[in-house]
Length: 150
Length: 150
DNA sequence: CAAATGTGGTTCGTAATAAGAACTATAACT
DNA sequence: AGTTATAGTTCTTATTACGAACCACATTTG
Image 1 (spheres, each protein chain N blue to C red):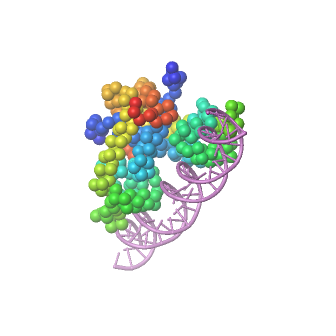
Image 2: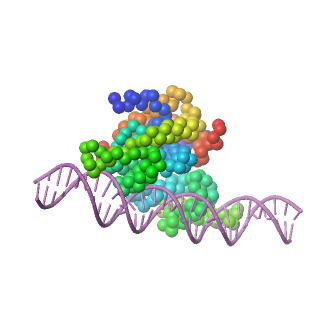
Image 3: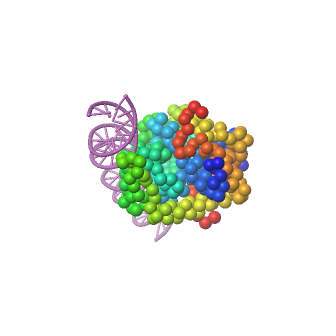
C-alpha cells in the first residue's frame, strides 16, 4: 500500500534515506563506544590500510589539520599509532594498534547486529544481489567523489 | 580482481561505504547551498509532512532544543514557517515556505546530478531493482530505528 | 652546493552543531 | 483545584571541523 507511490521515485530517493538510516545506526554504535562517526570510519579504513595523514584526510574529505586532532585523540586512547615513514622523514603512517583492531572487530559485529532488523527483510540471495548492486554502484567512487564530468 | 575478495563480505560491508559516499555527496550539496546536512534533511522531510517540533526531533534522532535552534535559523532564512497548532496551544507545526519548497526542488535535482556518476553504473532495470531492494530493506525503519528485538 | 619553492604535519584560534539543565506555558489526570 | 506530564524555548557547554600561521624536510633550480 504505502510503497506503491514510490514506483515513480528514483533510485536516489531510496539511496538517501538508506544512507540516513545507516548513519543513524553507525552514529549510535559510535556513541555507545565513545567514538565520533568520523573516528569510527577512520578505524574502518585503517583495518586494511596504513595511510599517511594526508591520504587519510583526502579519503575522508577532511582537512589535514582536522586529522591531526582526530588521530592525536585516537592515539591518546591507544586505538591508533603514528609511525614515522621510512621514505619521508616529515611523513607519518597511521595504523591500528591491536587494541584498535580488536575494538573495530567488536564494532563490526555490533553493526551487523544493529542492521540485522533491516537486512533480515531480504532473503540471503537478495542480500547478495543487493550487495553486488551496491558494489557496482560504488565502483566510480573508490574513496573519492568522481570527477564530475564522466 | 579487486571485487572478488568482497564475495565473502556481508551486505553491511556494502551498505556502510554506500552510506558514507551518499552522505559525502549530500554534504557537498549542502555546503554549496549553505545548508547543514541536518537542515538539508529537514527540508526533505518537510516536503511531504507537516510535523510538530517534537515529531521532527524524534524523526531525526535529535533533542528538541536542537530543533528549536535549527528551525529558528531556517525560519530566519525564510525556508520554513512555524505555525501554532490548532489542537494544542503549546505546540507548533513546522512547514516549508514556498521558497523552501523551491529550494528543495533544486537540491533534489542537484542530488540526482551529483549521484548520476554512480547510478549510471547500473542499467535502468538494475536501478529499479536496487531501489526496490532498498525500500524493502527500509520497511522496518519508517524514520525510527526499530525496537531492537524484532 | 645554495637558494627557492613545494609538501607533510602540527598548533592555535574560531565558528557551527548538538546536548544538558533550567524554565514557561498549556494540557491532562485525579 | 491541584498535581503531574507534555511542547517548546533559552542559556551554557562540549565536540568537531576549518582557516591561518608555522616548522621541518624534500625537491627543484641556478
